[in-house]
Image (cartoon, rainbow over all chains, first blue to last red; front, side, top):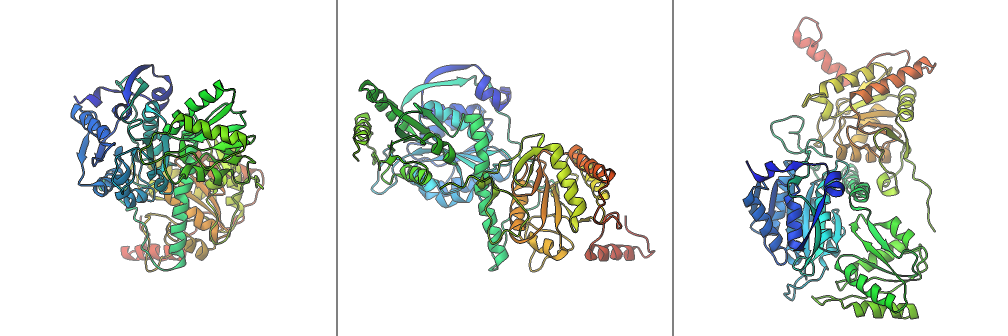
Length: 388
Length: 229
């Protein structure tokens, strides 16, 4: 008997909220693979790249132990992401992962997943995008992921990486969602560092994918009506073809919207607020949240009350929640680990016309630089003085 | 500054490219609820709205999809039977299937099928002003509903086997044969209460001209004038 056959299937609600948990001091890569151990995963396909490799090596170990039905290294990222598309079409639970340049290489395929309505989980261990060559942490690649149509979460730490990954499988496969869910984490800071993670027993696993009850028929050449193709229409140059494609694109974004209900149910909301009545607020995602927490503690020691909004879901973006949370804000700063400030742009676009707060254009570090908490603190104090 | 008026999903034509209702704040109903014009209602109220529209609008049509056209798993044949019972209670109703999602080129026969790649052709040709989708995979139902709302004045009803459809004017989620039969019962209730159906004088299922031709052809093949089973 394979190990996955010895695990007990439990409901997502039991797995996420009720099952007793024990604490483990583990790396982000270990946390992700422990989530996979409990995910009732069928197949994982990936191509190695730092800092993703360790997680997928560990998923390979899980295959060796009998927790997955299939696992292999593809020829490159285009191959890996194409192969996982095929796997998802056949109705099995799928996982792939990548980092920085690997993600960029496979981006065309990644952007095709939502249009094909492919449930799968894509782990992103963020890293600098070349050139020049670098293997340092930086999350610029998420700017490219924002408009692919994928649901996109940004985990702060090892615990989030465990929880979001498990939830991602279930949210991805909900009929009204039927989309890939990407779970991003800042490479090295989280993947290669240890943190406390509370996990339910490894003897439990999620229910398997219910592929006959999804938004599109999966490929099953034996059983009607499933054998009908789900091809996109032939591209004719006429209005009806244009309109069909437009409606199809709308449907992808509508499906993203529908994931809100499940993100709220399984992840406690699209954002998390600390000190909601503060007039100066930090808005951050990923490991910038952890840095911000420490800066807020230091500011508090100096007598300043600072609010913190942690964005958990980048797609869908918590538009209404953010507007409500920033209603009384006077100053906002947005610390990020990338040079373009993609989160800052999201925040500005969301809050335009909905807040009178000054939104500072930073702080940001990139290229692998760690963001010192003192830097955040400086921006906070300057903002309070009316600077920046 | 902010337009917080709830978005209403009303019959079109809404224009070139109306937004997806889900992106305008319309949320799907939970089990036991329905959706009418973008607002959450009780299941019973939703059924009564559906029943009234089916009895009073022009050219009511049922569009059964693959999930009820083939007996591909237990319970489907019973659900299909419940759809036929529903049809029997709607005077003048037509049944035009959506058997496949692939585009039909160079020309669709709108009296034979409806297709998600160009559903408005079937609506326009048959002058359908109220329709029911049942047994269609949700993705294809959704793109179909958006195109119908954009270009036609058809009132769309969805009896969804899953979570429902924001872009239809009336939607019931998690529909099995019990819910389909509840709609049939709602129609009977309205009739008992005195509602005279628009096509009260033409009871039963009406065949489109193409369906009549096919039926005639099959009868002719038998050579004895008997209709094919």
